[in-house]
Image (cartoon, rainbow, N blue to C red; front, side, top):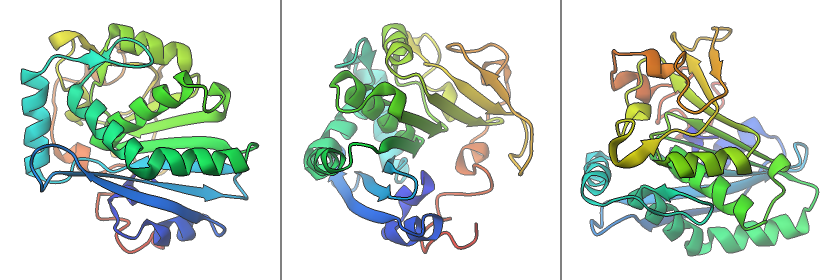
Amino acid sequence: MAVTAFSPVPEKCIKDVFADGVLIGQYTVQCDDNVNNTCSGFLAASASAKAIIMSFRGTHGHGELGQEFIDTLTQPPIDFIAGGKVNPFFSNAFNKLWNAGMKDAFLSYKNRHTDYSLWITGHSLGAAMAAIAGGTITKLGYFAPEKITLYTFGEPRVGNKDYAAAMDRLLPIVYRVIHHHDMVPHLPLKGMLGYFHHKSEVWYNNDMKRGDPYIVCAEDEGAKCSDSESELIWSDHDVYFGANIHFALNGCKKL
């Protein structure tokens, strides 16, 4: 579902994965002053899984990537509703999407399906927004924390140590999945402006083929996981479990 957020027609992939899956809504906003930089996400649901699915799209183009980098270097982290401080670009991107209809649709649907769980996911920038979504929704009491599962892929460092501690307190089911030499989870650099990862990391020190082993670091910035890797490359960020950002453009029947 993380890669599905890159598709202009996510309902195709949703139906391929969940026979009874429904698209609640897809939301796209201008991320910053550059009209070409957009952020996007969708809400879906499955009655058989009894779950609401919230997915956020990753970085869209080099212009957006450049703006993320500039904002990180020139703007200090800002206060986060759940505690600590977070990257201003990530926070503003999430809030713009959240207030562009996503929040209202989410609350309306979850109030009609009180027995559902919530699955939140995203890749890259989408992973950062997914983490902020999880912390926000839990802090505001919209969902019981034990009914929320947060899975992110290639998540950059989102906030400082106080933010990481707040996330660790609020959300018991969190997995930051990292592919081998993926460089993005190492950005911003650990400690720069206070940036620090929350737990828990799942590191695949391999090609992520079916059945490949992985290491779980249940603490913040686990030394035995990707922090132990010195060789960092961009290509490992583009592909997770054999799927790249183009994988779901016309559905997920390849699964």
